[in-house]
Image (spheres, rainbow, N blue to C red):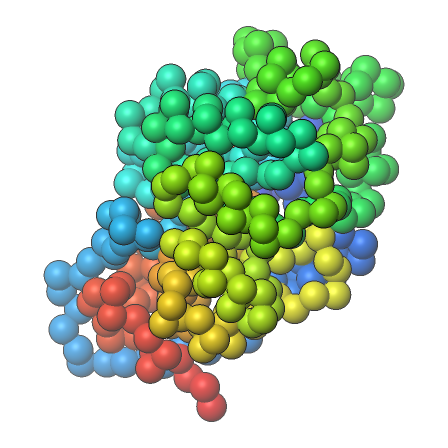
Length: 382
């Protein structure tokens, strides 16, 4: 593999990941629900936002350091929770967490990870964040929360927008599973990705580490869709959020807000932050992009609760635009997965470096030196 230093954009990492990761797993990362219209809008709506170029201002001494929910971060970017991360690269969640820790940004582990909470805790010193899905089995949910506490997680990210699983055509056509089924089609996909296959043979982590052996009567979990259909709770309500807040007792972030009314209800819970998100376009196809909804949600609750943004970020410029529209923090999911697929821990580090460089240079060319001072005045709103 060519040196990762020659990857200059997230798109470069995406191209390398496509060549290295079996199709079923690359497609899982690179897909949306139904027509994928909302998935595409997440990116396109960022491109429509224009910046003001400023000249003859002092650009020295720039700083990207900020805070998210009171935690110091090297830049206001966190790694988003992503399911099946360990199928993009062997031990993927562990590698991603180590890269984030070294870089100084938060790492969020998904409930549907391949590496378990305990696996990630074993290779990190900095507390990471844990993302929780609510299951019908409340004892299992309580157990997950307890395990996150025991691992020293500093925040719980509660996902609100996956009570039922959106239909993702690529996953259905690919017969997605972890580990992969050994049909001729799947065997061919793995055989044509020998580096991925060799790395995967070298790890024991090939299924859902937080689920298998922990949930009742679950010793194997080959089908994500069937298990989630059985276990994800369609009755999830604001009362459950209050119960989880009490059980957790620490910093709580609510993910999946895309409506001002829901944002006000979320602020009423006393949570520490909300994430404006449409699940990367993987749930309600036809919904608005995350970035298009950010300003009205900030206007509705930004004085009551910290507002973050997830969805569509593919560059440091996108991060800057989100900050300008009121976000106090941002998340990268697919850029993280592309970097991981392209080159493991080094690939994740390269993705973060790309975003940091783009954020720093763009901020300077907009005439600003401190990322904490970014506001709408850097935007050309015509």
